[in-house]
Each structure stands twice: as C-alpha cells, then as structure tokens.
Length: 127
Image (cartoon, rainbow, N blue to C red; front, side, top):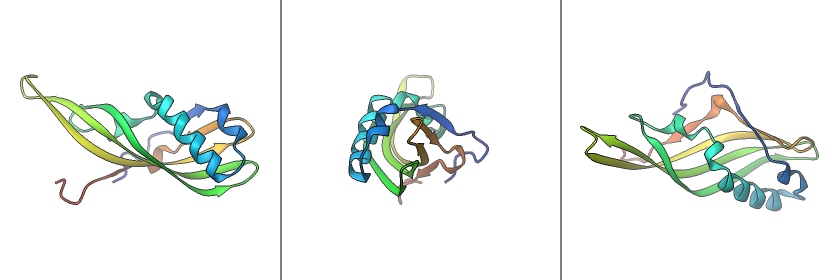
C-alpha cells in the first residue's frame, strides 16, 4: 500500500555512512545509524487512526546499487502503531511492517527517503 505518492522525500544527513567500504559495512552502519535516529523517519505516515510510532525493530536493508557515488536500496522494518480508542480509556497497539526506498549520496552524506515509495506491508490476516 503506497501511503501518499505526493509526499516529498525525507532528507537526512548521515556522514558516518560515507566511510562504508562495501555493501556489508554499509548495511551494518545504516541499521545502526537509523536505529539511533529513527525519530527522524517519516513513520507517522504509516500509522492509522491518529496513532503514533512506538518501538522500531526488525530492521533490514536491501542494497540494489552500490558504487563510489550512490547507494540505492530499500529499508524494511516493523514498529508498533499505538493509539487511544473510545473515550481515551483504552490503548490500542498494532504491529506494523513497512519499507522505504532510499538513495544515499556518498560524497555529501545525504540520505533521501523517497516520499512516493513509502509502503505499508499488511499481514495476510490483518483485515
């Protein structure tokens, strides 16, 4: 499910990723850096019913292109979508899975998380 194809890309600057010397090192650094800065990701786009993001986990990175100038890939993760239900007397939490396509510019440290490729991955029996 594409969340909103008109959303602009989210831009982060993560210079630590520039030093990665190969796909494996980039993947490890990417997960470490994103875990440290997950609050900067546009995860609220994945929430429903006015919920908010809680506890990002199970991170995976698929690198599709790695060269001297750019790294292109997909970041997949799970998180909890927490919201209050009814008269705010009941909390509701759902596990969500999602992926975001990215482009990392190795010379500048700029990470672009594409706004038009945000996808929520629904579990088979979720609805």
